[in-house]
Image 1 (cartoon, rainbow, N blue to C red):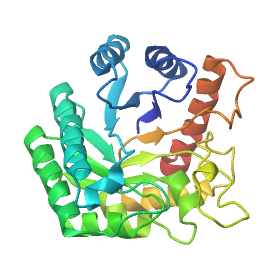
Image 2: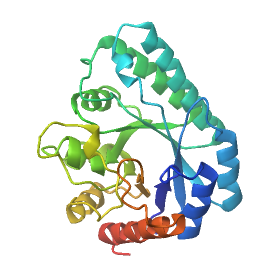
Image 3: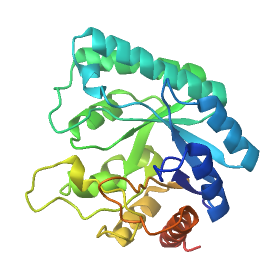
Length: 270
């Protein structure tokens, strides 16, 4: 049966180990961790192992992703930071690293130096036995270039359902990149705001079926791709969108798990 997962930072008021306990108790099989130099990754990995919760992915830092495409020392330093993330995944046996290609609404053009830096990361990933999954964001061109340019078996796609709905409502990613699908990030929102300007405010990260995403169509696309990996939720109860403030941590994760089970039924019939 297909595995179900939920991000370890879903309840921002709890610490990661507390969230992991709730995720496991609710019934989930796996989780993912946001990797960072200041994070207690060793402690998180030990906690997950102690309760039988698989850590399927590290989410790489993304706050300076635009520098990857620019001629700057920042870009070189950020490449090294991301390389350390990939190396850590290899050290801990985490099979996937999720990566952004840009950040925000205003992004640089694609560039040769960007491809050179990503090539360095892919070489490291191949060395570590780690796969890099690039997710869809506000713009498709950077993602399209990376997946077209790098044909390595260690390079693939992370399908972010919520981003597709609120950032690029005119684009359906599974028909384009479904054959390269490594991972999923599944959450709900209300689509693009009436002002029609793409903004972070619309990326609500609600539990599936609490927004207006057509999950029949989403799951049909996942099924048609032949993807057999986990269905990974990337949900949140964060300021100012405190949609679940009245729920206890276990109620929140139980609700999330019930939604994930419904997604699995839509994808697989079980």
